[in-house]
Image (cartoon, rainbow, N blue to C red; front, side, top):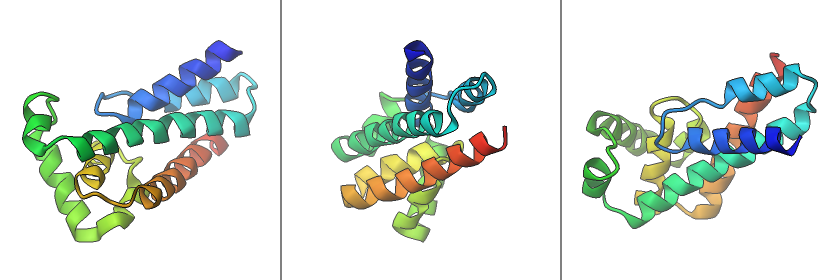
Length: 138
């Protein structure tokens, strides 16, 4: 059972970083095999939020040029995410779960030095809600 939770945790963590990967299939597979919904949602959410924290720290510590050249963050994704972040502000972090723009939003939160407690709250609310919706639709 531990291996299943670890797989879910790490797939969720990686899915929230700049690496393209999904974690919903692992979550759905576990739930369809009778794993507890609340526990699987909690494990997936913690992993995914931790992945976003990694993005925040990268954004906080590194400048944009380094992200584009060394981390291979595509300029178009950075520009799109930055425009959304600047237009709507911190509240966009509720949508950090969205594909393509969600990960760069968490990077911009770090670059913008968003209060970490607020970052953690907004990202957690969005990600837990997303996994809860996925889990209840199984």
